[in-house]
Image (cartoon, rainbow, N blue to C red; front, top):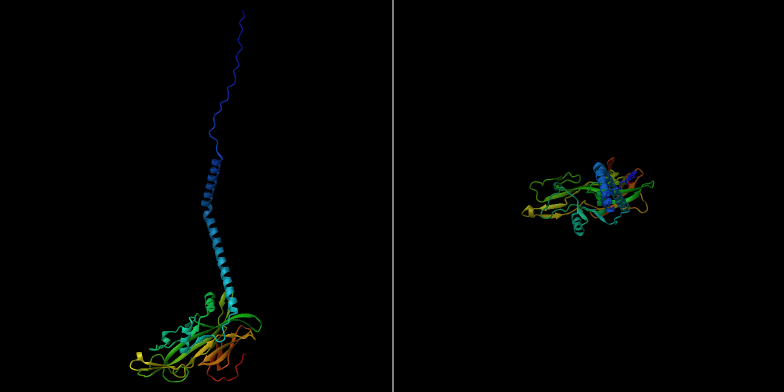
Length: 340
């Protein structure tokens, strides 16, 4: 009997074993990972480049602010110059007063009037009635120009004229004319004119004591330019110092000097009015003044070399040089005043 061999059984291949994967990454988690990566990149870039970037931004911001301020200042200056170019005060506007009674009235009438700064060494103090030093009109536009100009005229100069003139070539020039003064009230010991009879201390034993004035005045003309805004050195000056020829005040001892009698008799004192541009001649202007109530005029002319020529209609020019003209208001004119 034959033995039948069994056929070998074919082994089936092993089945694949799948490993269950972990939970899938959600979109929110992916976005969070991207955000952290981006944040890390930004922090790294800030750490490395931050100082230079910060400096760049800060510098540009400062330059922007500086440029903005420059533009604003330039706009303000342009507006100020346009206002000054056509500025005019009334012809009878008092801009400077030396008479003590009239000066006191102006001070009480308006806060626009101020006392000219005076050194205590230049002013004898009268008791019980102090002498009122000269006063001037404090014009707002002049204050604005003083504040804005690179090198303005002296702060205590009284503005007499501020307006655009034309030279003979037809070129516009913004002219600023101021008055510089020094007022002195001294003891009077005799003599006439020249200040020869004036002293700072009272004559010993004198009763009454007499006082006189000495006033140094100078008109100064400037051109105001906008490159940058500044006032040029004076184009011209007209100096006219005066001394009182007789006492202006008498101080009489009526028991004690502190309660003495004060008699004031002003003389030789000036008042100046606001300068006026000639509507018929843009090169010409006038400045009216009064001495003890007698009114007269100083003519002014803008020349081609940007020089201002002052020509008083009364008195006489006693000397002339690079520093300007010296005028004696009380002298008889030697020749007819000329505008040349």
